Image (tube, rainbow, N blue to C red; front, side):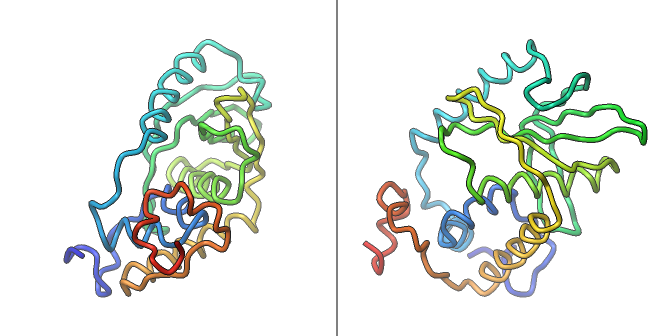
Length: 205
C-alpha cells in the first residue's frame, strides 16, 4: 500500500462509489485500496459507461416530471467534494428547482439495473445529497435512482437515518483502509459467484 494511504494520514478522500461497494461486500474496498491494480475492467463496467452516455442525450430532451419537478435546471456529471466527510464523487445529474426559500436540489444516479434499488445504491445517493447541500448551500431532501433498462425513476427520501448511515459507513471504510485489515465477506454468497475478486477470497469459494 502506498504512503498516501496509511494509518497516520486522514487527509485523503474516499470515493462515493466506495459506499456502494462496501454495502455490497466490504472486501471490495479493501482490495481496491490495499491491493490496488488487481481489479480487471469488466463487460458490465464498459456497458454501463455506454448506456450512461446514451441516457444523458435522452435526458436533455425530456421533461422533469419523472422526478416530480415541473421546472428546473439540469446539471450533468457534477463533481462534488467534502473535507468534512472525507469524500468526493461525481453526480450523474443534479436538478436545481426554484422554491419559496431559494430552491432545492435533486440528485439523480443512473444505474444499469432492473432490480429494485438496494441499500448500497441508496447510500451512494445519500452521500451525493450531503455533499451537494454542503457545497451548493441548498437542501436535497430526496433523490432518484434511474434504472436505465426499465426507464424508471425510483424516488429515495434522503432522511436522517440514511444520512447517518452514510456517515458511519464512510468512517468504517476509512478505518479498514488505515488498518489494512481485511473485513468479513458479504453474507449473501450468491454475490460472490460473479465477483471479479472471487479468486482472492479463498475462505469463501
